[in-house]
Length: 391
Image 1 (tube, one colour):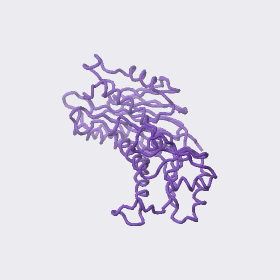
Image 2 (cartoon, rainbow, N blue to C red):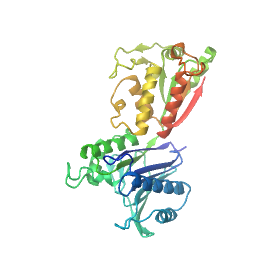
Image 3 (cartoon, rainbow, N blue to C red):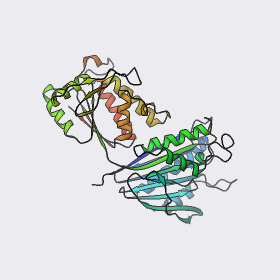
Image 4 (cartoon, rainbow, N blue to C red):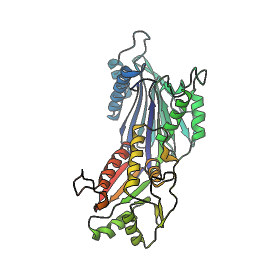
C-alpha cells in the first residue's frame, strides 16, 4: 500500500470592502488515489469575479477529475467564458494541480504566478512545456513526487502585496520563495503553509488588500493515524472490548473525559497524574498524563473548544490559529487532529452522563455525540479519513 498522503489547504483574502472573493479554489478527489485542485482568479473583484472564478474552477475540476484531456477543459472554458472587450483578456486565469496515485504531479498553468515547488524545504525548478490551446498559452509540467514535496499555487494578489504601500513593486515570487523556505518545517500542514503566506500578504497590504489574494498548498506526506477515545460504553460490560480495540490501533492515542480515562487506566493498570498547570487557557481544564496514552484531557468542555477551532480553521475566518501556539488540552488535541493526523479513528462510548443532559436533545442523545459528529464533518472538510465507532 502506498503510504503517502496528499494534504491540501488554501486560504483567501478578499479585496478591501468586498463581501465576495474573486478567487476560487475547488478540490475533487480523495487524497489517497488521485486529487485535482484548481485555483481560479476571476478578472476584477467582487460578485462578477466570484462568478467567473467559480464557473472556471468547477468546470475544470469536474472535467479533469473525470479524466477529460486538458485541451477539452480549456476549450470548454474558452467557449464558456467571455473575453473582456476592453482588455482582450480572458475573464479568469487558473492553476491546476493534479496528483495521481501519490506518485506524479501534473501542473497546468494559465496566467497565474508560477507554482512554487519546495523539495526538502528548498525551491527547485521543474520542467515546463508551453503550448497554445484556443489562443491561450498554457504551461504544463509532469513531476515525479517525493515525500515532503510542497506545491504552492497563488493568485496574483499575492505577488502584488504591498504595491505602493510597504513595497514599490510588490512582493515578488522570489520573495515568496524566500519566505516559504524560511518558514519551512516538514510538520506544517498545507493549510498552515498557505495561512502563513497569506498572513504575510495581509501584513504587506496593511490589512487592506488591493486585490483578492489566495494561496493554495499541496503537501506530500506520510499517513499518520490518531485515535481518540471519549465516553464510557452504554453497557459497562463492553468496556474491555472497547479498550482492547482502541489500544490495539496503531498511531497516537488521545483519551477524553474523567470516567473514560479512569476506565483506560484500569485497563492498562496505570495511574493518571493530573497536571496542575492550566496551560495558556484557564477556561480549559488541565491535562493529565498516563503511560501508554499520548494525551489525557477532560471531556465536553475541551471537545467543545476543539470544535470551535475546527470551524474557524475550515471556514478560514481565523488567521491567528491560536491553538497552534497554545498548550492547553483543546489546543493539543487540535494540533494532533488538524496538523499531524491523516487518518482519525473515534471510539465513542454512548453512556449518558447525567451532568451533560441538554433539555433540547432527546434523552438518549448526549452533547458528546453531537460534538463528535460536528467535529468529524469539519475534519472531513480538511481532507482527513474519519472512522467513528460507537459502543
